[in-house]
Structures are given as C-alpha cells and as structure tokens.
Image (spheres, rainbow, N blue to C red):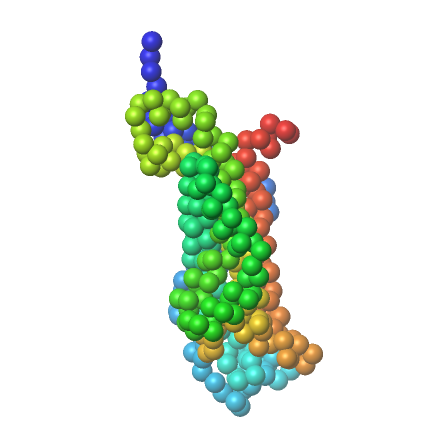
Length: 302
C-alpha cells in the first residue's frame, strides 16, 4: 500500500493552480486582458513619476494659475493638463498623486489582509472562547463608524503618511476575518487535515503548510476587491481633508481641492476623479474575473 505525503500533494496542487491561472489569463476575454495592460501601465507610470513629470508637482506659478488643458483657449505651453488654483502643473501632480494613491492602497490593503487573515485563521482553528472573543472584536469593528475612528486617530497621532496608511489598513480587516474564518471552519475537520494531525504535526505546521494552500484563492480575490475599496476610502478621506496633507498630492486630495472649481474649471477635479474611477474599475473587474477563475463551486454550478 502506497502512502502520499500530504505536503507534497499540497505543493503539487499549488503548482497546478498556478499553471491553471496562467492558462486562464491567456484565454481571458479582451476586457480582462485590457485591464491587465492598464494595470501594468499604471504601475510603470507610478514608478517612473519623477522621470515622466514635466514640472515640480509642488512648484507654484500664480501667473499660470487656472489654465485649461491643451486644446482649449488660454492654454499655456508646458502644462498639458492645465494648472490648478495655485498654478501647479496638473499633469505632474497627477503622476505623483497616482504614485501615492497606489502606494497607500496596496500597503493599506496588505495590512488589512494580514490582520484579518490572521484573526480569521486563529478564530476558525481554535474555536471555543477564542473564536467568541475574536468575533466580538470583528462585530465591534463593523459597528464602529470608521470616519469617526479616522478623525480620532488624526487628532491624536497627526496626519503623517505612515499614520494615514496604518489608519487605512485598519479599515477592512473585519471582511478578511469573516471570510477566512468561514474557510478554515470548512476544512478544519477535513480528512486530509486529520491525516496530517495523525503524523504529529502541530497547529503551526497544519495552518502554514496545509490550510493556507486551500484558502489562498479567496484571500487573493478578496484582496483585489479590497484594493479598490481602499482607493475609494483614501479618496473619500482626502476629499474630507483627513488624508495626506498638502502639498503632497494624492488623487483624492486633488479631487477635493478641485470641487470648488467644478463650475468654472472642471478639469481640476475631473482629471484625478476619472483616474480614481479607472483604477477602481480595473481592480474590481480583475477581482471578479479571479473569483470566477479560482472558485471551483461556481464552475460546478455552471
């Protein structure tokens, strides 16, 4: 009678899953491929912002203030997307705003994923009073108004970029905790987990080498949705003046400063708002595609 090493089977399953995902990417429809191309372009542009920027994003020129984009009357040469109320180049600020917005969104969503996934795994695996306490914390997080928490944090710790990223990271961890806990509860007493326990493996080895491989797909899918949520959250807080403070540019703060000029100079607020919409839409579409690709139950139903 031959025996199968559970860890070896899990590694093989991950390799098959990776090749399966790559095949799905090649066979995806044109919209998903376009989303991947847009995402790659946005990342490259954000990384090369200092090279691509035509002006200092914080340099002010009152003589060039409130200039429209190229192609409109009163356009000033050298300012492709026009200027804001202080005469700053909107094109350069858009590049740097994209950079900081993506940085905040990615790091903030990773913080949420790590916190929520850890709590969900511990809660689902341990059960009992540990599960009750951790789920009570999740309920408190859901019930507590996040905007009020952001206000308190900014008032106590200030509006430094690091503090703001941490605040953003504490926004959506409860969603990860609930989803991961449910996934762990579903496989905690599965036969292959019982087989690993018989071999003498401890909780750490079981969780790291066997459970994570089975719950990685829903975590990845949830993270893609989380990035778009964090981008919109950052934009909302910056719009309200709770985000990264001037002169540092983010897409949300640029939209917020442009709201007073929507009637007369709409390009100031519309340009960063359109960029926010594109980024959020790309991540939402990719997250939806990943869910359809990685969720075996949806394929069985179809």
